[in-house]
Length: 253
Image 1 (tube, rainbow, N blue to C red):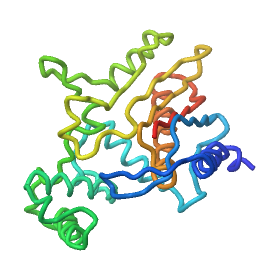
Image 2: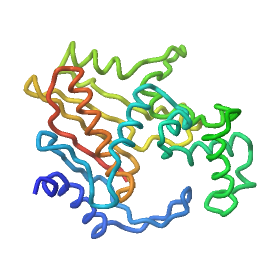
Image 3: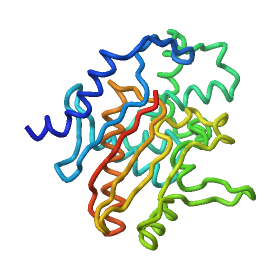
């Protein structure tokens, strides 16, 4: 019953996409999808942690490793892969092909791309001479969270500012972190899907997190995102002496 209570929001979302969603072809991925827009789910974290087991179970270790990796401001797929998490390897490989001007030689969604990716991944894992620059993902999430460049190139640490802001002025509406840096999008291996989060302190003791996610792979990625930002709410609440309450997940596409 507890699992159903926590997951009914996600299951309702799946039903809405299936019943109300319309077809949309995505040129970048080459996929035809069912698409819905402007949906929202609300999870009460006081009732438990929303880990989804409806599909293949979500690995909480993978969720935590990626979140800690982002919180450290890292942007290398290898540093995450060294911890056994391979979820960013394909994006790193595609950026590697782009930087080496090999995209035409190895087009996406082809046998040759898959073969070259397997070789690339083996080198990343086993070859001590592997060039770390070839695993760079560009200025993605963690970089923007911890090193957003201001007009003079000086890094802005959004996570530190967030924690300081919540402690000093809980009632502020400025408790926001963003990964959507328009100037840097062209250099990212993948534009941020979960791109802006706002934290709200209520009743001087609860912490709510509202995430806007512009691009949502409802079946595969969203359960992972739910767990990631629920965990982030717990971490920020712990650092600021608050109790995590609501995770509000607002979906774009």
